[in-house]
Amino acid sequence: MPPSSSAIRKTIRTYLDRHPEERDALAGLFAVCEQPVDVTARTMLPGHVTCSAVVVDRRRRVLHIRHRATQGLVLAPGGHVEPEDRTLLDAALRELSEEAGIPPGALCLTPQLLGSPIDIDVHDIAADPLKDEPAHRHYDFRYVFYLSGEEPPTIAPQDEEVSGAQWLAFSEVTSPTLRAKLLRTRLDGQPEPVNASALIHDGAGRYLLHLRDHKPGVIWQSGAFALLGGGRAHDDQDLEDTLLRELSEEAPGLRLEDVEPYAVEEATSVDGLRVPIQVFAGRWRGNPDRLRLYEGVLLHWFTSDELDRLRLSPATRDLIHRHTAENPPGDKEDVVPAVWGGGSRTVLNGIGVHLHLEDADGRVLLGLRHPDSKYAGDTWHGVRRPALLDLGAGTGQVPAALLPVLPRLARLDLVDADRDMLHQADLFLRPLLAGRAAAFHPVPAEEFTAPEEGYRADLVTCARAFHWMDRPAVLAVADRVTSPGAALAIMGDGSLWTHRAPWTTALRELIQSHLGAERRAGTTGAYSGPDRRYEDDLADSPFSDLEEHRFPLRRTWTPDMVVGYLRSTSFARPALFGDRHPRFEAEARALLEQHAAKEGGLVEDTVFDVLLARRPGGAR
Image (cartoon, rainbow, N blue to C red):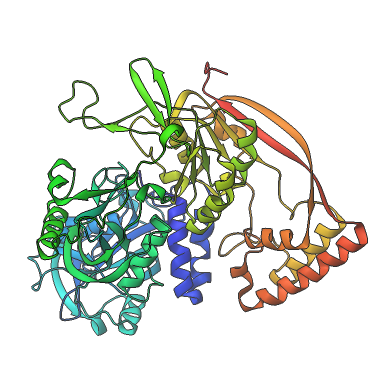
């Protein structure tokens, strides 16, 4: 499946944060990405996305090739996105491998740009009568890579498309926009770690390992035990900052002592790139079962003599053995207390020939079958219970509303690309879970995959965010991860922008005085309604058995609630106002307080619509 529109929108937003002067040039592309279309398809007109690879060697030179199809133009390797490309970066790597014969393993990301494009170039393509292609436009996403080795690899040009290759200094790069950006950067061609991992030990011979989600082709070291950690972000000051941020995101509450650099290791990313990793050693003596884990399946202590029983990379196994040899366990009495202390709180349920073990926190004990097992070898085994999957979950308002009326619900999975939103959802839902399990998945809804073997959701919910999603792709995801009798609920009630009351009218006029008459949406451009009805999307999906329910609803807002709501909307989010946002919020708060006093409160009367869809013939 090619990259989703939501993933491309996120890439554009990140790029425009660094290059705000290019908003107008990319406004057309961003508007197209708001629609449920494949903006990478060659048939997408009047323009579509392409990708290029900018390879920088140790002498600060960039690889160029001579394309036969462009009458001998000398350009960076690149081309169209193919359906099998998982990301735009994958497309750039594939084109480089095809056109120049350089495999991903000979490259690594740069610490300056990481996985973000250095340039998004907009250029016109002339009509080609031989291919029956009209004139159109390319939006070329350009990704920078360093060579992982000292010497440039052998270039093996693709004869049918490429007639030669050469390395050019930054000042000689043929693309004006790329040349200008390269000359402004500090790219030096010298690889250095862009990932940080934590070798966590208790000082008594045990090491804390993280069992990753089983998502082959999506995450690195899928389904294996590994060290906690992750990739550097643009806001990280250094790699220790990266490590602390990753730990706070993956396992809040995990605080290390005596953190210090230990080793630099190399690994291979899911894209095939070489990844230099700075490994930090740190001590912790806590109980991992008391941590809330945002990513992966579990955390567990292991001694070095237990490692051979685990699915674990040889490099990580060797690293732990080395650390054990250098730091032999000290006082054996200084160990972490036993993990299990549930006593009589354990709940035992006989289900056929299986044993269901659950504690008071709603956690279910699973067993990993032996690889040679006659049935379901090498898989985690347990009993499936009713599950809710909320797509575009935001701060968790939908699950919070449903928990009291779905008492049998045992598991919640919340999906949203915004980690901060999911963190707020976790804080909001924690007091309401009452023993239910909750998992938070920081990915776009279009990219969600089953978190483990045998996962099936029984109810999928999606609120206003459905408008902004690639709806056919989301419905295909729902089809893959739901039980046969599952229901899909698409719900919403409009917004304060469309509500008609004196206070909402005054608020809308205030927003328009700052941003213009049109309702804003995204980073650039104006809001447009869905190009087709949700009912039509559902009719063309596996969930074509449709019911509509309408519920009158009255809300009473406070000024603070409205101001907080506006920050989360597409039409009044802070980035649209820039440095004028504090002034706007002060004016909005004063206006709302005035209307609340005059009208006896800020009341919204609306109708909450729910489209409830199932597969034809599914259970009700």
